[in-house]
Image 1 (cartoon, rainbow, N blue to C red):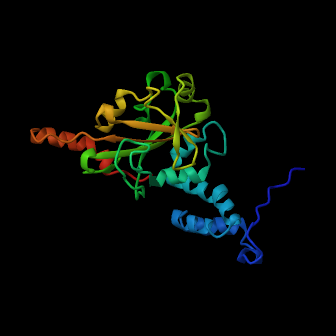
Image 2: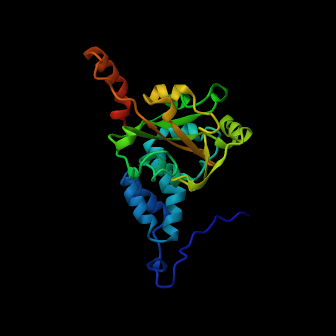
Image 3: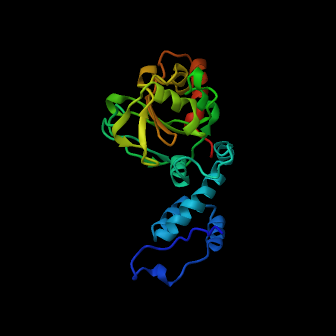
Amino acid sequence: MLLPKQYRCTHSAACICIKGHLSEDAIYLIFQHLNWNPRLIALMSCVCKWFDEIAKRILWKEFCRTRAPKMMRDLQSSGSHNVDGNWKALAKLLIYCSGCSQRTLFDLTHVPGHFVYKTRFSKTLGKSFLIPQCRKDVLYVSDLCEHLDQGDDGDVGFFRGVFESFSVSRVRKMLIDRKASLHPSEVCPYCKAKLWNMLQAKLIPRSAGIRLDAYDDSIECYVCLNGHMLGACTLQPLSDSEGASDFDEHKDRLKPRILSATM
């Protein structure tokens, strides 16, 4: 007979957790009432190993399912109850813009990472990041997180995304076939896995730059071994010579990335 895995605190005898825990059902109901508040989940995860395991197995999963239900259904369409890289990593990807360090991952000056209040992920936008041979893959990509007036780098945008079933995707196969290199030092900010360079493998189509209103040669993009994607680009400025009607049309095209909807 299979026995359920037991999760116990691994702290010292002085740890308050040895006095007993709430049941998992009680914790579930409490956080359901709190609408799976990510800040409170993170705080509880710091209490001890036992609480951290509950957060990884249950709470972060429910957070993802509540904030992006359609996206989660697609990512689990293969029938698996898990996602690549674990639920905690996916939850962080939903609400955290990684920014970049000083000229390490992206050819940009230092832009600090930060949490975002609202983000929209789109499968349609993800299609514009796939070359024709990979269009059957499912990729969700976020709207741009804009960081304007970054000195010599101009207006910079960051985006992030996630593949469904990355281990069997066409993109992964082509990265291997084209002998794409892994970044020598940087790792995924969401799951700490190694990163493939999609630009080096020539897997970023021109359609990505068109959808982002970015310079084609400025788009840099990486995908980790678990299928989490992160990238950056330099945004094209509005022309002062454009007429009012042209400006309004361009402004309408920018709305999805400025006023993003909830997940």
